[in-house]
Each structure stands twice: as C-alpha cells, then as structure tokens.
Length: 110
Image (cartoon, rainbow, N blue to C red):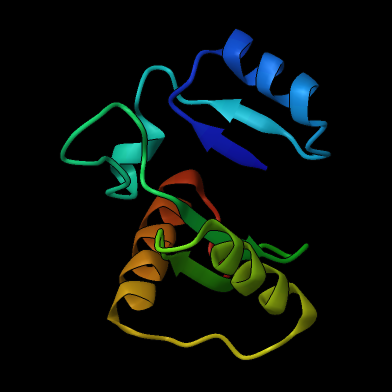
C-alpha cells in the first residue's frame, strides 16, 4: 500500500491514471507522516520511505533513498525476493520508528 498527504480524490485519480495495483491511503490530516519523520523541510510532499512487511507483520526492509525512484523500487523488490538489504543508520532509524508506531497500534513483530 502507499500513503501520501494527498486528498482521497487525488489518490483515486492517480490510481485510475496509472492503474497501480495496490491500495493508496490518504494522510490528508498529516498524522502518519510525522510519526516517521517523513516531512520535508520545504514543500507539502513527504519523503519517499518504504517498509517491506511480510504477511506476519515482520519488517523485512526499511528504505529511505530518494536519489532514484527506480533504484528505490528495486531495493524494495529485492527485499521481497529475499536479497539482503543494507542496514545503515538510516535503516535502523526507520525500523525503530516502525517498532514504536507498531507498539502504539498493539503490534509487535519486527
């Protein structure tokens, strides 16, 4: 699934144009993005963050890389395929934020 600060109708139009094949969620109230420090210093858009989560809610990878959208997607696909993912400080920080939010929501598999 994907989430952005766009309104629901904007998400619907985006999905209809691109036929994404996954669920888009709206964070128009800007509650989820700040929980992951996803806000940019300038502009209304969130940073590109990806969490690859398996069916039992285990986080397989956390990706915080905006240098190239295709490389970002490739890293997520590699994680789904079971390839090792680098675990730098950025990744560790994202995983920590995911754990804290999951704990608030009553989930604990990371």
